[in-house]
Length: 329
Image (cartoon, rainbow, N blue to C red; front, side, top):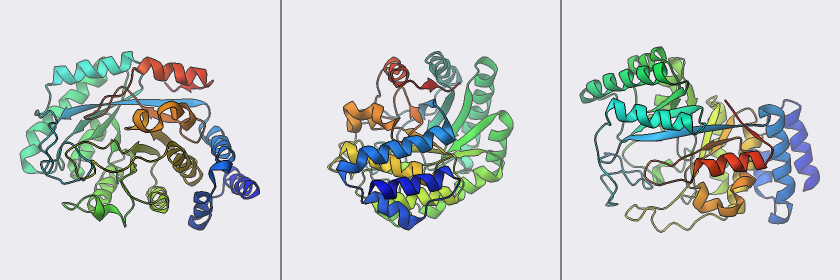
């Protein structure tokens, strides 16, 4: 298997693209051969992404009362999770969090809102407030700004671009054929439609998903190829952290080596993308968190997630330094 891994690695390093059948060959790599696969993915990361690790932070700017029934989500009205519920935070509060993220060495900051999206008529006032808040953040920090607001109109996407937002985050969550097992209140096509709206407005798109929701490794591979076809340049990989009260509360966790294998295969499929470890990394990878950065990943979501806490950002900075890597500015 080592020879085949090397052949596929050379194909990517020479500027070629891996085929779905070839990616499925990598899915069959035995645990004993995983160090070779990880090293190969790391060499691809080094050639196309260098030694920098991209750090981003998010803020749960509006929590709970989401109308959608995504099976993993603590904020859905279809689940009883006891999650904090609050309306859109005041601009001063959001600005305070943005400045704290910058002080923690983060380059990208995103406001994330619960709910289906901003394209409903009743969201117009909130959207105006968000635009004003982003303007203030740009005036008072050096952060690069992202947004994760759900579905958008073309006009809203244009306004985000004009105010200085660089990237729009909107996950597909899983593969097209598994999506209906995860969400029943909107479709995979609804999500890709929003991605096109953002791209048409000139926004870069951050799009990935959650692994460990009961999907197969081959379905994760399908998702990676779908991301490649959409031209996604930033791919967050969350690992399910089951929340009591959600439909997936009893979902068994993925083994850490399977998580790392998934990330390595994503690197083969998406050699030029920022692949970012995100929610659930602390609980699921445990002592192998640093291995993700030597198995293809070159980005991290730090400082906490929407409804679950992360770890001290200083520990992540130390981990990056210990690996001989550098934080991207």
